[in-house]
View 1 (cartoon, rainbow, N blue to C red):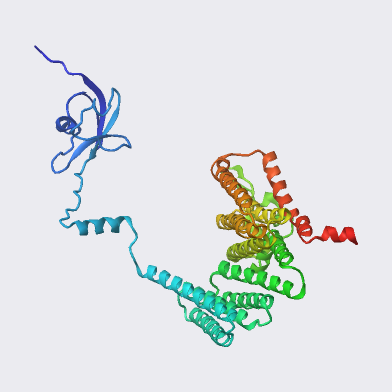
View 2 (cartoon, rainbow, N blue to C red):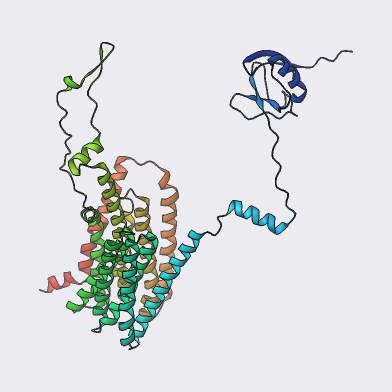
Length: 484
């Protein structure tokens, strides 16, 4: 009895030859390859050959054409099939685990040691400056007043000298920030006229050292700008408290409003700091001359007209005349903007937390604090830079958390019964968390209509505008107007 096997008609390419064959569908490729290589005049000695689809992986030689789903009319190619390299044989379990960990994890390097050293220096500076502030509050001002200015001066001198000598920019930035930390502590020690004077002087010293550090080292523009912005907020708040005999609620609420008003003007301030000139609007491209003079002729046919001017190049010609300088100043403006937003975020978070702490459980005060926190959240959608948007959103989240904590632990203490406030804070925190989850996961992947986008823009504008009327309400200005 004769057994007839099913065959598959395929076309095989090998070398410079292509043949059409009818091969058994249930025979392994290893048994078919010698005959196929002979038909293609391919030397099968010394190499491991197999078949593969065009652009596909090699087919296993132990498989059959039917097993790898090859059908009539398919095109296969002869390809090299080198044996897989066996894995390393490890006779020590600890050595094997170390080798695998080294492949999947980053090992400790000299750069890692530098980062650890920089973090240690900053942590030590913060702890030392904090201890100096505690000593001042305890009544000992002589020793901190002697130590902190010297530490700030030495750190700043080392930062500037390191920059001049070509040291690591991260080291220079770390020393400069260390000088700012010690400078703030020195301001607290020197401001013996009370808490407002201490806050104002600490902000002035820290902000001044941040400006000097950035100008002297040219590094960490965003970080230095953030420190300078926080210093400005502290100086304004302390100065306002020194010249205005108002309750702490009014001082903190006014400071928060000033920080909120800084957000819309941050872009203009960063452009001015970077020296980035703004061309006239609308931007007019340079004159191109007569188009007929520049028209090219290809094979006797007028093929191309004048080459259109590059918009970015035209902007550079109008603004700076140098595209490289424009790029550098644009990067500097972006760093300044990031620093201003980060500093304003810290400023607003501290101000609204203090406002909620001293004003709870007044509903108007809590609504005002919520509006200030919402101004940070809605401004997060304005900026194209992910770092800037993340900074504002995280600042808004921290502001909301600060308001809730202040309302629970301070407002409830003043009222005497904390259960109602705690329950309200519990529900509010859960609702805000759910809203943030929906916005970040569901709404982020959707496309919105122009009408919806415009509605959100109006909501953003309304959030910023409502801060001032609420501030006047918190300051009790409406009652004063009625009684006047």
